Amino acid sequence: MKSTAVAPSNIAFIKYWGRKDPKINLPNSATVSMNMSNLLTTTTVEFSKEYKNDQITIDGENIEKESNRAIKHLDRIRKLAKISLKAKVISRNSFPKSSGLASSASGFAALTLAGTNAAGLKLNKRQLSTLARLGSGSAARSIPDGFVELKEGHDHKSSYAYSLFPAHYWKINSIAIITSTDKKTIGSLEGHESANTSPFYKKRLELLPKKVSLLKEALRAKDFIKFGEIVEAEALELHAIALTSKPPILYWNSGTITVMKTCENLRTKGILCYFTMDAGPQPVIYCLEKNTKKIVKELKKIEDIKNIIINSPCKGAFITNKHLF
Ligand code: DP6
Image (cartoon, rainbow, N blue to C red; front, side):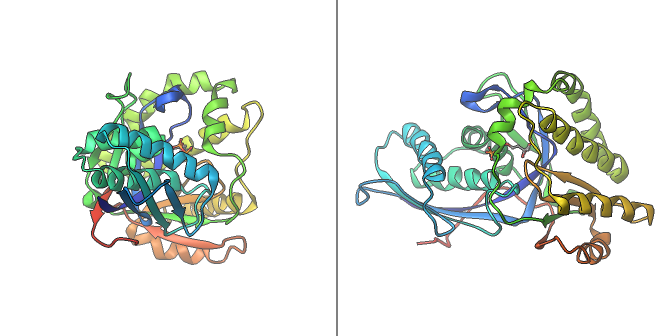
């Protein structure tokens, strides 16, 4: 009844922002992402009659808000497995959590896989993905391999993620740039809830299906410029929605903007790279693998940067026998 899973975080090319049904994290649109090889969560779950209560430790801490969210997810797993045993959960991130690097994506994907396995359930990837979505919308995308689409769907079962292309399909890197290690003050939840207060949100939803298909076309053609232009415009659009929501949400800091400008400058020198950001201040730069070193060298000149994590596309969540306890 003990199981350990590793799951990558993912960064979305086309973002999830706003929900049709908040109770089941049913997104307003399809989204597309890439798994990140060096932003990993490892989680061990053990159900046992020895435990009187659920015990959740994430990166050595027991924080009430995070624990409650994890316990809610354990309840979903217990219901499916028809068990009532309490669990011990230990989870470790290879990167700062709650800082806009989608630790909830890798966290809930790892918890879903380790938890269901520990409870004796054998779910397929589609079932794992829908279950992970209930914990965190973006976690659904950390289950399949490589380049992933999460279907918009119309109910719980029809909104699941699947692999568009395997990890080795395209040698592009995503460089995560940590501009702040502070915990973010406004989570994605507030963003999902206030998205439709932006006067531009309706237009965004109208244009999204076309954007998703153009992005998939660029991926299919491995057209890096087309891909990068769509991805960067999409990131700016998401933040434009956040900035024009009521109350407005500003996720960037000065480091974020410096990185965005650096990207622009590198392009004028012929080094192709494009940025994105999730709901936080950490930019992520996409580049062809061969340009990574040159870009990192430029980034290292920026004072505000705390850390740089280079990622390649990678497989989705998997089981390991290296337990954390
Ligand atoms: C901006 O609902 O998955 O990263 O509230 O932290 O669970 P949590 O996040 P989630 O929202 C993700 C929002 C996003 C865009 C994306 O990942 O698609």
